[in-house]
Length: 409
Image (cartoon, rainbow, N blue to C red; front, side):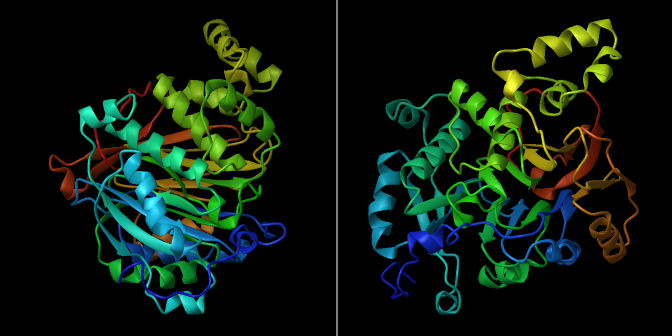
């Protein structure tokens, strides 16, 4: 199938952005796995959370393109007539395609009112090309920056909603069962994966609409899902603006993911990231001990970093490279449960989703609800041959994380 295929009329910008408000009632359903897994159990466990939100479901599959050393873009287009122009824009930015294919069967565009979906295999840019195009950093930084730039400049026409090296994102403004049907995800039920992240619900803050704000949100190899609405959204946006970090989607959720990504790349310890994102009450801080308290004040009084915070009822799960972490606001106003053993870590907005996963897979997990404001993180340890998947999953304490990660998931 080519882009010359006849489709229904393009989705209007109003409908593309979720109608009058772009906001649906309910709370987000979060489900994430770090470790080798199969889709059948993942979908069945996540499905119990569907009642929390009737519209919006995104599925990120880690290791989906594990046997391929290329980046893969999934792009949604509002209007098919603009596809050649937008593809040319990416080519001029230094993004060259090896091939492309449809993500959705043609007949489904008549059944669902939705954008057009195409998948692209992206050639790895050379060092010379990166320099010629004015890029800084390595290949991963170049790809990530170009994705953000494209999405910012073309927000009315298209969105690159998946741009991971080995992972693949699939999202719609419909229910999880519809997302599975639209992308025919059940055909991959036997595919070996190294993790998954599922989010159910339209974005809480409108941003640029339900299609633009649909989660998981992917920035290269950083992926995030979030439940709740931040009272600190303006503070977070102000801090990112001061640091020159653009938000391609523009929701309060994306701000959290961008902030955690920035702090990880700064080389802060997990405990220090926790201090900033879920700042302590004054009485708690004074009980930290002199050395830690001094460092805590240094970070939380920093003129820019002090604006990083997860205030208001929120939970978030973020994956970057080999690490997946979850955290809550300091008041713990959103449910959050974690289950883990030495092979896998499971995060969910409700314990029953984890119990369902345990029941289906007959897996034994230690289940806990992290205390208010606490960050919990896990490191994936790979087999000698990365294509064999993850060997084990280790819970991290207060480690300093050295980036960039050397793995590609």
